[in-house]
Amino acid sequence: MMSFLDLAKRRYATKKYDNVKKVSAEQIEELKEIIRLSPSSINSQPWKFTFVTNEVVKKELASKSYMNENSINDVSLLVVFSVMDDIEHFEQRNISILPELWRTAFYEPIVKANGDIATKSWMENQVYLSLGYFLSACISMGLDATPMEGIDRSAYKEILAQDGFSPLFAVTVGYADKTDWAHPTVLPKSRFELDEVVQSI
Ligand SMILES: Cc1cc2nc3c(=O)[nH]c(=O)nc-3n(C[C@H](O)[C@H](O)[C@H](O)COP(=O)(O)O)c2cc1C
Picture 1: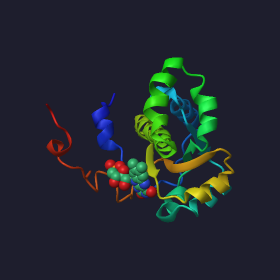
Picture 2: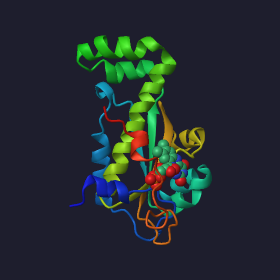
Picture 3: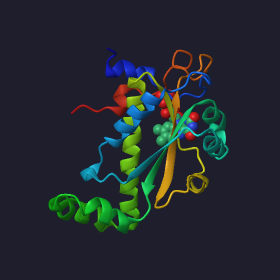
Picture 4: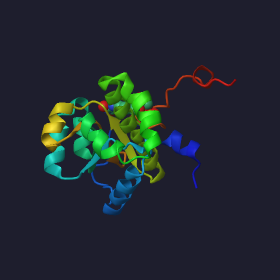
């Protein structure tokens, strides 16, 4: 079995997908179960994950995805990550069911006390966390994936007719095309040196 470090070296933001080799229905079901289990602060789960395989809808979304259009059209699965819109609804649905202490000793004094903008930003942080988790899951299943903030969020919201949720970013999942110039064997990973980003005390 490949170590996590090996997987980290192998995964990369795929720019060109194989448009023949498709993610299987079983793999899609497994990814759905995995993303549902994503962790979040106080288990707040302020998210919705939309798995798009419908070609018509996917094409429409691709047309609202700037430089990502071609890769979305080549790939068979696009997952859209959205955050809950309404803080009041979030508190009723997600926060009220938590252990009392999580609300009174954490959510209210540490999150909500900072105001609506900070609370919304904290909710979005939870969705971004699930992105990291999802990207790791994909490569562990031998799937290539690309996170995409380069999407028109309001067009996505309209196309998906999402009520109460707003798209933040999308992820394509599939198999990289052999000619992809971004593949790490062609374009080596670019990162700051370990000493610059990791501190040991
Ligand atoms: C939140 C987020 C948004 C991104 N948006 C895009 C995007 O819209 N299009 C794209 O081609 N790559 C996008 N990327 C990929 C990054 O450019 C890439 O992860 C980074 O350059 C590091 O390269 P690597 O992932 O191949 O190691 C995004 C990455 C993240 C984490």
